[in-house]
Image 1 (cartoon, rainbow, N blue to C red):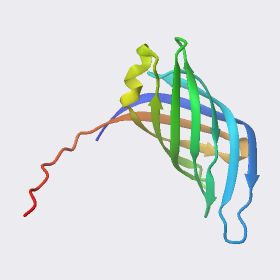
Image 2 (cartoon, rainbow, N blue to C red; image 1 turned 45 degrees about the vertical axis):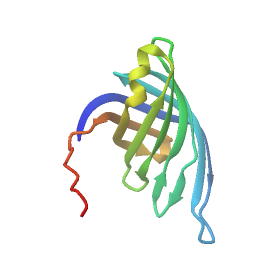
Image 3 (cartoon, helix red, strand yellow; image 1 turned 90 degrees about the vertical axis):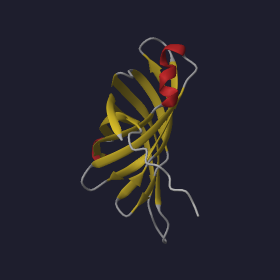
Image 4 (cartoon, rainbow, N blue to C red; image 1 turned 45 degrees about the horizontal axis):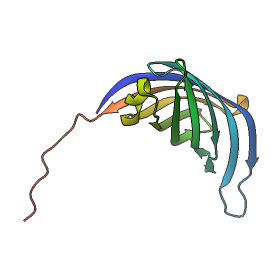
Amino acid sequence: MQLEHLCDVEWRYGLLKELQARDGRDGRVYGEGEGRFSGRLSGVARWSNFPRLHDGYAHPDARGVLETTDGGLVFFTLTGLSDLADGAGVHVMTFATDHTPSAWVNKVLAVGEGSIDPARAALSMRYYSCTVDYRPTIPATS
């Protein structure tokens, strides 16, 4: 797989509510915030997240919209895994737009890595677009 730098994002929660884990159930968080994208994909995003909390990890489930620097709108989904103890985060993002200059993002699967700071309700992430590089021959069945 080839990875190419797509953007860096500073995520900040403006609203954050938590439901603690209990009676064998996972915890949940509801949050809303703003993200500042810089790089090949740039602009300001508004988003909401409803992650599951389990065994010291957050499993993000976010949706949002990015207003690009040229005025387009790009919708996105974000999932992943965040270690709340050591602050490491991994994300997967997909995008959808009808904004012609940004249409290339409709074919992008992005992976991201970075830092999570639960105490400050902030994340700093770097995202890469993924391109398939490994294409083995599929053996015939007998």
